[in-house]
Figure (spheres, rainbow, N blue to C red):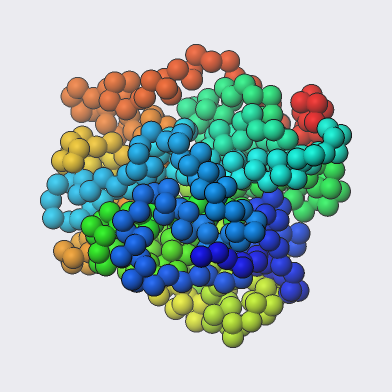
Length: 512
């Protein structure tokens, strides 16, 4: 089955639609909105449980993506090849293996390991695919063009840790693509910085910006909004604002559901450590497509804008970002949340009118920019709560959860969580107590390998006899990074003009 999908902006009050290729290459809509598919395709229970439940990860990815990508844009054979190539870099045959019943008792706590890609983080699942997709589209555009007429893409992204290295590893050495990743100086882990800055490919440059992740993200959004800069450099997005990332992440919700229930229909709750909301949004699409998920649970750290919103109906940025043990979630504004709000506004306020939904979103985000907050109608929260719940986990609880799981885990013994995964597992344990229902399967998403967060992991585990980070946690591949030369460009102020000038200087050095 193919798709006749088109994509539109969440903020557009005009009927402007883009193809999949245009939405992916452009990344962010010109009005500052995010691209959403014109329709969410639905899949019958018969197809889900008699066919999809038996597929490999790669086969399942093809079935899902085919519903969102017209075969005229990417023929079947090409799409299958893109998928195979993207997941051939993973260390597990399952791509995203489900570790079942980690504690070994009857509480059905399963951990979905999303960190088996090249950079040991969940972002690889999407960004290996996105990198290949960019290359595929550019090769097709540039097929018979002379060198000076070739279309080139300048990818600009912001990272709070894992997106940067996953984007770099997805795009390194790709023809006609240059990549610039901004990250907040001193606010990512040493291994995350090493992963980004030790890549020698000349089309890659990291920019260490004095400021916070939100500063970096604001700069990236401003660059996307600069029409002159965009027309000169053809800027592309790899942050979770890029629709292709959400699409690629849908696969592991279906795949892990079938693993948790042995391919049958059952009660399943997904618990997702959430910062920018892209990871859990993929679960929302899976649920809307027909996967019978009980609930999607947003697990936040002390930067809890999403938890506060679901409890109060007010979307309000805090005065500052708190630095926590789970830095990838240390953000004030969850970029991807806008997509969910568009669907909720369309359903509950706009009488299913796309244009009206765009007007509502535009109003809310103008208020957020000018007043620092907006308040939504009660029907929006009631609508959101049909699919979502939320839990907030403190810094102290994060450390305690890493410690507790190391002590009680049976499958395998001494299981080590990274701090983001610990936020999800802590929220899951609360739910298990509250629900008190042995039939529910809880799938807690593990977003990164514990080796990437040595400080928090050691704080939790160094008191245990015989524990050693070097031998128990750190893979040889990551150990090697500290010996390699680094390539870092420091930007001493979180300033858009300064960053744009730096990008242009580096592009000239790259000969692009």
